[in-house]
Length: 445
Image (cartoon, rainbow, N blue to C red):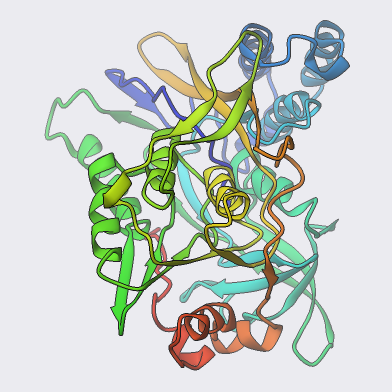
């Protein structure tokens, strides 16, 4: 349930000393609301105001009085009472733009936290999809359970991403309270403790000493890269490509499509793919379309060149193309699926996508001198208008064939969507077997 921008041009700069959060941010620390944390939080709000004022694609801010809104939220932060609420106010300040790609990335906390389960929207309802072994959630909650409320908030397609953003990024909690319906339709209200792993509050990433801190960060990156690696399988002229995100070089994209060209059908699974880089999207499109095309016109503060894709000509994949999407397919994944529809290049199967389609850049900030804490803002610099004259923002891609797993499918680990796509490609496989083709992997805590 991650909100990642379509384009990322900037990354966190390394400093001699990095701190997970220079403002105390544990559950007990949040109770100590003092002038130090107030000033730091107000500084973050000011940076959010400046970033949007300087870079947002709409200089009229959709009719918002940006100056008045800033002063309103600056006053609110003075009385926030806790760091989590202050971060929530910074996020709420930006949320007034109603823009999926303009948001606050809070300073990291000195711990890793996992609630022990994953939720996802299917259609308009929310269901548990995974439960992490060894957590308090195991045995209490199960895949296929329908989540009605999370921490006393209604859960639906409009609210889930906000709840995820707030309770995972802005104000992590030591546990969660859920109201759910089990497979039998019985109501339950559960308290579930989160699993928390403490981290060092101050990390030295200068490479000095034994370098343990910087190597820890490298290991974390390697663990993440492993979980989001590209995975493929081939059988009887059909290739399935499980693509977790759009962060591949041209050479990497071409390599996978080189494998696909040896098959008659490519099933591109973009479910839960939040998007990624513009260059990867353009190369993907160029590998399935036999002519140069405009993916989208870019609308911003000044005249912008359209986003285009150059065909790879005779090296492009020309076989049957099936694209799978769901409610967590966002940004570049949505653009690719919509191009396939508009160009009549293939069929799109699954659920309506996220409707989070803008173009953005990340702007990085820090506070402190010798010891720093870092945060950033993703700011939309262009709206994207497709070939049909419409934007996908808040609308999403409506699949050609709407097909969703049932609660029982989620409980058993079955994947009827992939099984149906394979059947369309000429292969017969059970939903149970399809669900085992790409086993789910947890990122280590």
